[in-house]
Length: 376
Image (cartoon, rainbow, N blue to C red; front, side, top):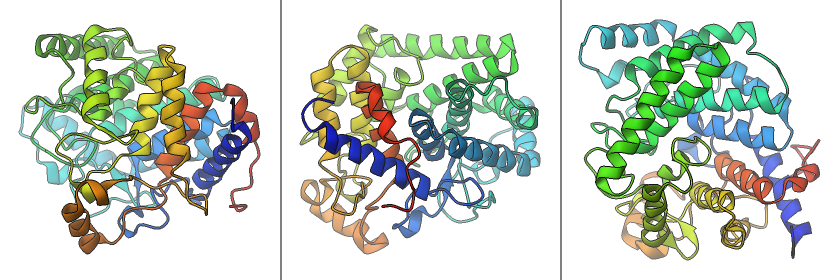
């Protein structure tokens, strides 16, 4: 890991412990232990956390999460089947009765006033499950998970390109590029796990549509009605594989993200972001580093990784975002007044740090195997 490799290995082990500690007996990963609004399990966050743990060889923990997901999907089978039927009949979508993006740790639907109709988490789960089966040498899809995977695959086929809230729980009337990337990855994964060629064909149709639109627009825009960029579009390349890393329009998108969304070395979500002042997120900084590593830009990828490493506090916590208090003090204060201080420890941040470190130095994962989640 070059200079400071011992410190970085220690931080990787710290992040693995943090992820393990976020897992509840049910198998769910709670998004943050210290932020009252994040005492839920988002399919998206949890799927990336499980993937990070698989890259750290913590396969048992990842397996527990995926089985929790399947049970949670089974519990809402009537809700998903009704949504699929409405779509097939051409009926309008009612976001208030769509399958949720987040659950309680027990796998129950959360009824509150938060936007909860987000399609991306379902695609991300299928992608993460397929990665788990491959990385853990688990073989074929376990039979008890098949019904949930089949149901989610049907859901993505019928609903996946409909307007919904984006990965940040905003703009519910738009079709979001990052969400389409998640749907694509989920369909590809389902096609592989279920051996259904039709799902792969649907995924390819979606991929070509997203690429055609981006080539006309000159970059991968945030959504069908927002021409700016969103750093979540980085996932189109790594890890979802919708865009080739050398695809000119994707390279231009990365340039825009790196230019417009850089905040002292970290990456913000999107230009108009005001959530807690619109700070830089370790999740997205790691996403950029992951892409840079994939094209051999290792020095720049390490610079992004080091930015994240410098944000761990003395207790080993890694927050959701940084710099918003200085970038936009008024909006930062407004959110503090509403919800308190931003999340000081986010399991998803830890996951993406582990992924980037593993991408840059796979040998580092040996420092994480068998860590004690209580030794924080």
